[in-house]
Length: 154
Image (cartoon, rainbow, N blue to C red; front, side):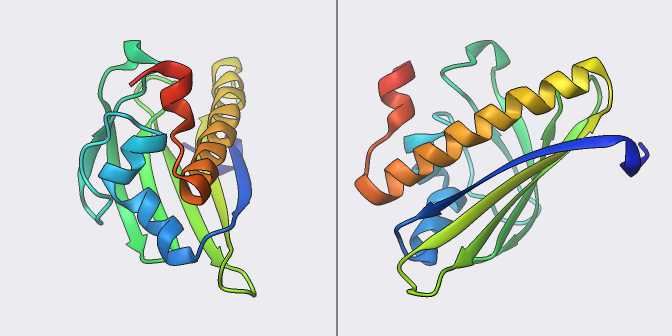
């Protein structure tokens, strides 16, 4: 698909934890399952094919995730199925060490939706989803709280 005709969404958040802790909380399935994808199976190592499940979207079942690239404390690049049939989106999560080494800036960008009504709605929906996911990551890293568990059950 022509890159010019694709949409993206994103979100960023500052987390009051060292970059190593924040990266590990996204990279490791056992940690990711505590605040985001309850059914996360498999660490995000390059070349891995893992699955995620979401209690707030049980109808989705196992979501296949392909790990494209991982650079410790810098980047996690994933691909997952789009809401548009037979399409896959790129998800890039970047980690930036802030000046005091006790804070991390996390940015997530998802791209790949076509400029159609369905693609626009997908970008809007996932933009809100990433805002929720990053807020949950912040609560987990800073306070050990799994916000999604309280909202949607275990």
